[in-house]
Length: 121
Image (cartoon, rainbow, N blue to C red; front, side, top):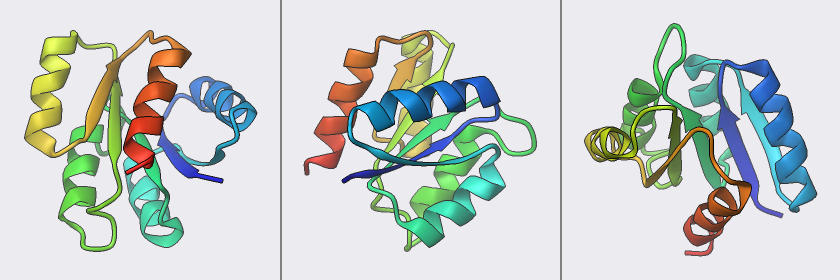
């Protein structure tokens, strides 16, 4: 079973994602802020990280940079989430080292395809 870490400050979205991903056979762990997410990534070594960009305290861009510069977490694929325009999101992704991105709202099928591609390497 592949382990996914979902980092997002929106409790409702975390709950929905937990249900959605568990129904597809993923183990899901979650954090509600970037600091907690980084600690959990180091401790749990997930197969993939889903990361929201807009969060208080530390935004997803900074979280991604810290994850990618940490030897313990650098190899974990990261998918960024945001309601931003896809072109802007792609630019952000390139600047912080994320492996892929997806704009909110998104289709589950598209997310699952990206997740499968990144975790089957």
